Image (tube, rainbow, N blue to C red; front, side, top):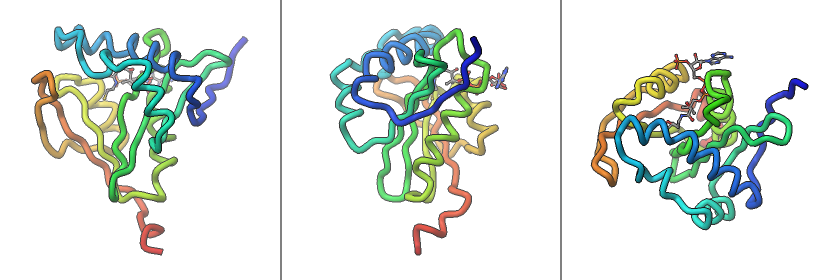
Length: 164
Ligand SMILES: CC(C)(COP(=O)(O)OP(=O)(O)OC[C@H]1O[C@@H](n2cnc3c(N)ncnc32)[C@H](O)[C@@H]1OP(=O)(O)O)[C@@H](O)C(=O)NCCC(=O)NCCS
């Protein structure tokens, strides 16, 4: 049976599946940076539950009942900080990540002037994906483990509604 991809706001009960997919997805980044303690890999179930219970926007992507991806964003002043974009390894390269990114942008668009995110400075596929979605590198900084991160931003196409 072929299922349509369904993107929806996450519920606290999704925490376990989100963490499972996140951990599987970020393993490739752990291998790239030879560091199994990257923040998305050390985040606990309780921490994910706390995010889901708070004000952040968290979206899940499902094929049928199966959770295959998620993303989150929190709004601070006029910026939506997007993070933890994760797609199950066997489902990557089918457009799920791109769909999640567009969906979280749409969910925050009326409240912000820009989207911001970061990724590993050596994660070329991620940088390409974000570049295709209109993000530009605006700087670099080290993460808590000392890895070099690229900071990317994208302006909201029509922020006029903020002033209305
Ligand atoms: C980054 C990540 C979320 C992207 O998810 P994804 O579902 O593979 O993303 P997409 O399919 O939308 O795009 C990725 C690639 O697939 C290609 N693609 C998109 N739609 C496609 C389709 N229908 N069929 C085949 N390929 C497709 C894209 O061209 C892109 O290729 P390229 O970047 O090599 O040029 C995923 O790889 C992941 O979970 N990575 C580990 C965690 C991580 O690094 N997260 C980001 C941290 S900032």
